[in-house]
Structures are given as C-alpha cells and as structure tokens.
View 1 (tube, rainbow, N blue to C red):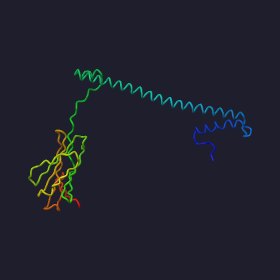
View 2: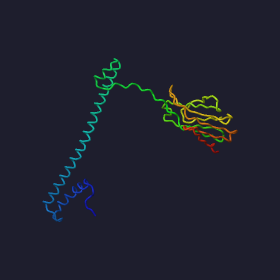
View 3: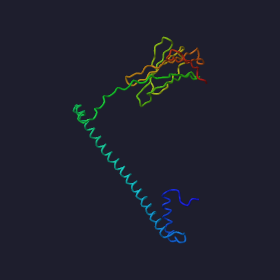
Length: 232
C-alpha cells in the first residue's frame, strides 16, 4: 500500500504534517537531526514554489482580463468614431472621406434574391375526398416574407384559377372530388413583387367517384409518377 498520496499538493501537505512529528521523534525513527533539517528545507522550498505558482496563475488571469478590458474599450471607442466618420461622409456626400480615413465605403444595397422554386409538389386524398397538397422550399416560414400561391386547372384546357396564398408548406382542397374532371395544381413562391418559377404541376385524375382517384406528378424529364389514394 502506497504511503504517499497521489497528487503533488497532497504530498506537500503530507510532509508538512509529518515533519514536526519526525523531528521530535527522529532518534526513535532512526533519522538524524541533519536529515530532518534537509527535509524541512525541501518542504519549505516546495511550499514557496507552490505559492509562487498560484500567485503567477492569478497574476496571469488578472493580466489576461486587463488585456481583454483594454482591447474592448479601444474597439468600442474606435467603433463609435467609425460611425461618426461614416455619418459625416453620408451627410456631406463626399466619398473621399472614406479614402482619407482608409476605411472601406459601405457596399451598395443588394436586391433580395428571387424566391426559390417550390419543389417536390405532392398530394394525398383522404377517404373523405379531401386533397392535401405539400411541397418543399429553401426559403419558407413567416420570417422570410414569402407566401406560396396555389393555382388549380380543371381538365386539359381549363383556365388556371388562383386558390389563395399561404405561408405554410401545405394547402388543403376539400372539394376535389366534386370537380368531375382531372385537376392540375401548381405552386409559386412570392416575396413582394418577386416571383419564383412555378413548381412542376401535380395532376389529380378523378375516375368517376370519390372512391377512385389517382394522383400523378409530372416529372421534370416528362415522365409521370402515379400515386394511389391515401388508405382509409
């Protein structure tokens, strides 16, 4: 069984607690007074080195924090001055101010990109004859300012009719089984006056009754993927 504890500090504390006892009982322990003086000096040196290490660590932490504080104070004040320079350049309409200050002029505002084309338009018809459309989009959700406009066409030559707009990635058409003809759907993303290309169309082919229907997707290569009605 090891006598000394495992850590360096614990060993220092162990000898500090034993040196006095060993010195008082050195003859009974077969240790000389000279040996105990040597051990006491080594223990004191170890304690002094440990205390110096802790002081150095604290000083390093304090110096690091002082550097952070000084740098932040400099940057904060400098950022205020940069704002002053930019405001002066804008007020005077003199771009030469940026050249004198050796700071880059502000970039010209970039137009917002076109909304992305809705992708993977699909649909599912419930046993009650309710069609739920779904699609994907790279830029969706209320924070983007994008709305999705849904259009429907009945038959092969019918006009496209707007069904409305939504910020969601789904749309429900509850009357799909009453049209008496194939219905084609498409979705377009809009942000203000900017429009995406229309999605690839989705064809819902109704065969006579609400109990028999096929959903067909027109793929980009011209092929058609058919999907059966959603199970009850």
